Amino acid sequence: MIDKNNNFHPLGKIFGELAKAYANHFIEQLKDFPLKRYYYPLVVIESYQGDINQTLLAEELFLDKASIVRMLDYLEAEECIRRVQNPQDRRAHLLELTPKAIAMIPDIKKALQKSNETCIKEAEALGITNIDVEVV
Image (tube, rainbow, N blue to C red; front, side, top):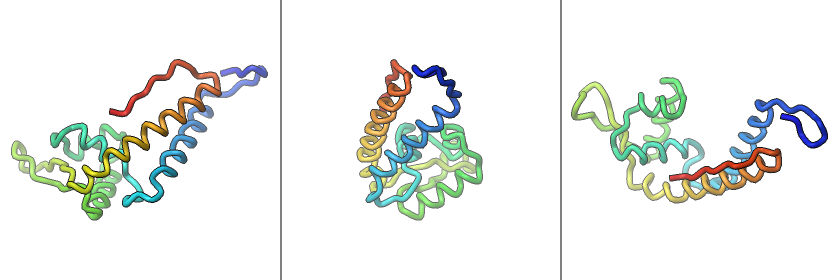
């Protein structure tokens, strides 16, 4: 990408800067939250309405098995999820949100939406336009 001063900026650098700004904004909004990490996985689990296992969650989050297990162990210790046996496959476990996690979801979504808005403004300042993102 070439800016108005005719300087070349690789998209990777721009995306890296946007990702850093996004993460910083998102984390700042949730600094007083009961959890210290792994907010977005709760939103993903909720979106599957009780029909997601850790393999599918790993695919959705682009994470390896070890990272998913570590994340789920943390969320289970924080009483945000339960692993329940899948009635269709006794070897697999479905992920279920606890009432504690369900109560957190609106605040996480609000933080995601505000971070999206901030990041879109940053992107537009860099000349990236026509971005439309919504947290559902």
